[in-house]
Image 1 (cartoon, rainbow, N blue to C red):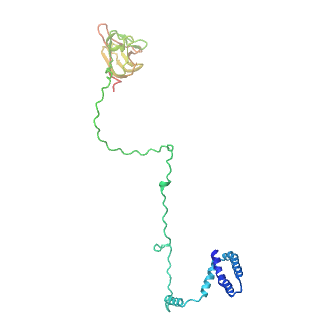
Image 2 (cartoon, rainbow, N blue to C red):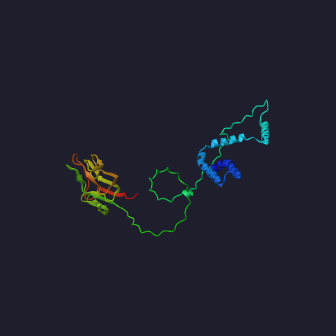
Length: 309
């Protein structure tokens, strides 16, 4: 606003102040008249200053251009404009120069300058280390890999200390052999054959009162039975395992007596019983013997204990 005020003061100073000065020189007005004129000029400048500041800038520039056009051009400028117009104006028969168009996407004619992306220093933004989180769920097992190559043989280690002495090697035995010197005849029921002569009876595994062998060492056993038949009578016996008939010894009726035998192997468990049974009296059967010789024998022994591999 001060610039505009000074611009408007110039005409006042150039017009009225000069007239006031000429009037002073002529002697028509005194010093009081000059002060009055100056005060009027100041009041006008103060009053019209805000109004002039509201004039649009475009109108003000247009007024300035109009004032410039009104002013006469100097001779040198007129001559220079004529030379410029003759130089760049096309002659007769020549076409007007055509301007070339460019697309904004052509690689050879960049329109906008590429702005590099901003770079952020991550180390400045790094915060403090947080607390350790909870353990996650276990994932699925992967596939089994192939067997690796065999490693090198390691160095030989030092000799170890002597161990404690082991248990004494245990050998298991079981054997018996018994005989009968009295003859035996059948009756109305089955009857066990009781033996009265003992040849071998290790650890008393064979009971002479019941006529049965009791197994105390489980394993595989071999058994053999030998009898003498009676003339004109059958011989009909069984080798029994507990209450089961295992094998039979049989001889038909004959005019002469003969020796008959039967043998087998059995796998026994502890407390199993093996004995000889005479068949009942549906048929008359008997075994022969006398007090002078032993005609009936029953033997058995352990072949292999079950504890051995």
